[in-house]
Image (cartoon, rainbow, N blue to C red; front, top):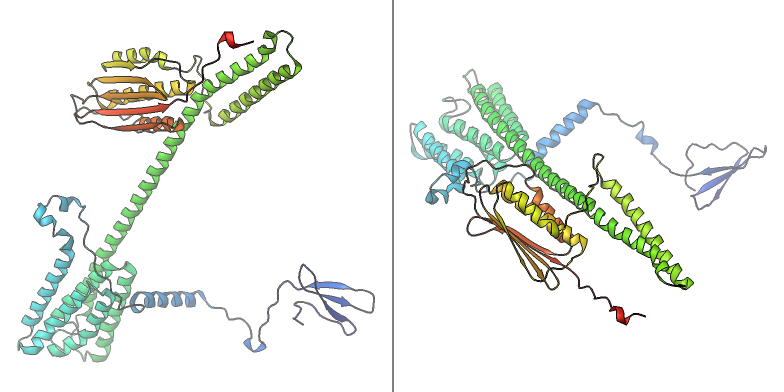
Length: 490
C-alpha cells in the first residue's frame, strides 16, 4: 500500500484502500463515529531518512559552478575540434574598389596575414638565439606552428602555445627573458588575439586568466629573484583582447540592427498591403452596395409588374429582397470595421472607364503628355473590373509623374474576348538628375497587384529597353449570357 502523505491513523482507526476514477484513496473509519473520511492521494514523495535535510547552496556557490562550467565549455570541451577559418566576405567597400585580379584573392587575406605573422615569429625566434642550430630552429618553429594552428584548431592552438612556453624558456636559458622569450611573447599574443576573434569574448577572457595564472605561478615558484615580463605581457594582451571584444560587440550590434531593419521592412510591407486591401474594400463597398440595393428594389417591385402573380412567385421575390437587404446590412457591418474614424464615403459614385478622359485631362494639366488608344468593341464591364481598371491606370500615370518628370505616357485599352487588357507605358525622363518625390512611393505597385489578384488577373511591371517603364494588366471577365428576346417571353 503506498504511503499517505500528511495523514495519521489513531489507535482504533482503520485504513481501507479503495479505488476511484479521480485517483487512489483510503477510507479512514474510527469507532467514535467521526468517520469515514476520504483521503485522496494526489502525489507521493518518498525520501530516505539517511538523506537528512535538503542542502541549500549559497549564491556564491552557484556562481562558482557556473563559471567553472563556462571554463569547461570554452577551453576543455571539444578542444581539438576542427574549425577551418572561412574566407573573408568580399562585399565590403574597400574590397569592391580593388582591381578584379586582386579581388579574386581578397577572401584569403586573413589566412595570408596569419601566415605572415607566423613567418615573422619564426625569424624572430631564430635571430634571438645566439648559438643557432636546432635550438634556434625550435625556438622559432614551435610558436609559428601554434600561430598557424589557429586557422584550423583554435582552442588546441592556445593550449599548444601555453604548454610549449616553458620549453621555449628552457631553450633560451630560462633567465634571458623570463618567462616569455621574444618568440613566445609574440606567438602567444597572436594566438590569444586570433582565437578570441574566432570564438567569443568570454573565451578570450578565460585564455587571458589561464595565461595570467601560469605567469604568476612560475614567478612565485621559479623566478628566484629574476625580473619577469609577465605583467607587461598581460597588459599588452589585455589591450589586444579589448580591441577584439569591441569588434565582437560592434559586429553583434550591426547584425541586430540589420535583423531589426529586416523585420521593420517586412512589417512595413505587411502594413502597406493591409492599407491597400482596406482601400480596395472601401471602394468596392460602394459598387457592391449599389448592386445589392438594385436587387432589393427590383425584387420588391417585380410582383407589381405582373398581373395576378401566383403566391409562390410573390414569396420568392420577397425572399430575394430579404436576402439582399440582409447581405447589404452585413456588408456595411463588415466594412465598418476597416473604415478609419475620419473616413467619409464619397458623394459621387466610384469612377469607371467612362471617366478616364477626365483623368487624362488632369494628368496633361499636371505636365505629362499622355495618349489613349482603345481597341475592340467597347462594352459595359462589371463594376469591380471597371473600378480596378480605372485605379490601375490612375496609379500608373501617378508613378510616371513622380518618377519620370518631363516624359510622355501612352494608355492602351483592349476589349478582348474573355477580359480587358491594359497597358500603360512611359518614356525615360529627360531630367534624371532631378530629385524625385517619394510621397506614396512603394504603395502603387502593391495596390495594383492586389486589385489584379482580387480579380484573378495577371500583371507585369518592369522597365523597358529605352529607359522607361511599362505596366501590363489583363483582367478576366466571365462571359454573360444574352437575355432572351422579348418575343420569346410569355
